Image (cartoon, rainbow, N blue to C red; front, side):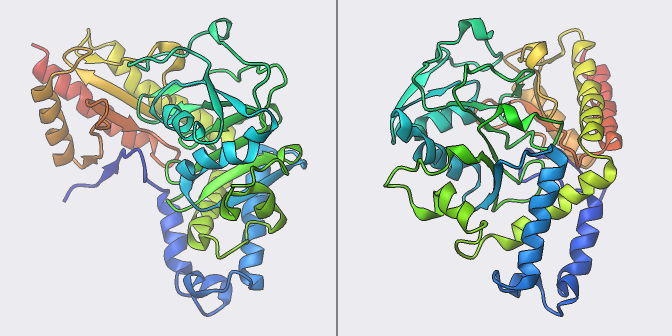
Length: 365
C-alpha cells in the first residue's frame, strides 16, 4: 500500500507527532497508571489538563483576560443553536452574513429563536464576499454572525468586518489556529475541533465576559455559556479525550513556532495548488474569487467551471492509487476539494501538485 496523503475536510489529518504522544500516554496518562478515558473529570489530573489546554489557547491567540475559554460538546453545529440562545435576547434580532453552506445552516438554526436579518442577498453560488458597502447591517441587531472560512465552498474572509459596535460572532471551525487573529475585535469566536485543531467531539468557544448573563430562559444548561463558564467547562462530564487531543495539537502548533509559522505554511501550501490551477489554461477551474480563496479548503473542477464527471472520476481514482485520499468534493457542490490544514505537510501538498501536473499533461491534449 502506498503512503497515504490525507486531504480530508474533517475529521481531518492530525500531526504524526501527536499520534506518537497519544500512543505513549493512552494507557498511562501523566503517570497516573490509568488512561484518561477512565479518569474522573473531577480529579486533579483532569483539572490540570483542563487548565493547560485553556492556557495554550490563550497563548497562541493572545486571548485577552476578559474572555472566557470554554470546551463544549455538540461541535460547531451545537453552537449554531447556542449563539442565539445566549445572545439574541437583547433585541430579539440578529444579523447573519451568509457566504456558504455553514453560515446558511447557522442562520437557519437561529431563526428558531429570534428574527434573522440576512445581511447580503441569498444566492445559489457562493464564490465571493461582497464589499461591506453592500451589506445591510441592522444597528439594532444583538450580534453579527459570520463564518470566517466556508469549508464546503472554499470562501475565506481576508478582513475583519466593521460591525459598528455590534458584537461580532465568528464560526472559525475550519481556519482556527491557521493564522493570528485579533480576538479583541470579536465578541465570540467558536468552532468544532475536528478540522484544524483536533478531533470531533468538542467545540472551542471564546466569549467576551460582558456577553454572558444574557441567555434565553429556554436555553439548555449544556449550551449555556454563563453556566459553563462558572463551572470551568466541567458542568457535567466533558468530552475529555477530545479536549486532551485538542490540547496536544495546540501544543504541537506552539512547538512548530506558533501561528506565524502556520500562516506562512498555509500560504505556501495553498499557492502550490492555486498556481497549478491558474497555469492550466482552464483545464482546472477554481470557482472562488481570488481575493477570498481559502487557504484551508481548495475546491476545483476539471474541464470547465461546471466540471467533467468522467475526468473528475478518473482524477480521483488515480489519486487514490497514489495514496492521495479524501479529495472528492462535498456532495452539495461536487468536483474535487483539497484541504490543506496545519497538519498537512508541504511535502504532501507537493505530491498532490505533482499529480495534478501529470494529470493535466495527460488529458489536456
